[in-house]
Image 1: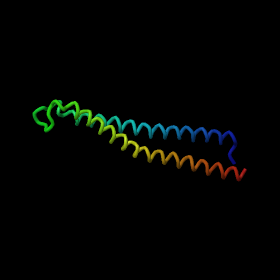
Image 2: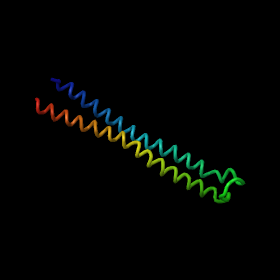
Image 3: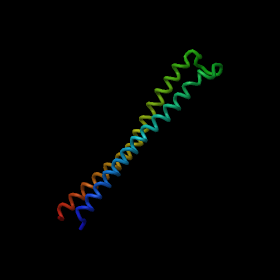
Image 4: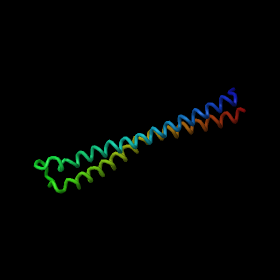
Length: 109
């Protein structure tokens, strides 16, 4: 049977790992948003750089840059949220397993 000190230490480890998983999920969302936003801005900015080879007139280049940025940010955010969902589900599984273990230990003690 575990001592109370060991159980408290395990509780601290579980909380620390939970914080780590939440930070990992938030980081995924931030990274996907930033990378896709940058990529969208680069693709949308082509009319500003290549005036002759684009269908869009050069004076609309800023608009396409902003449109590309917005689309990239949106796609990056939604993709990051989908990727972070797996990590958050792992966190929920951890919390559920910890609660089951605590309820089983409470019945034994």
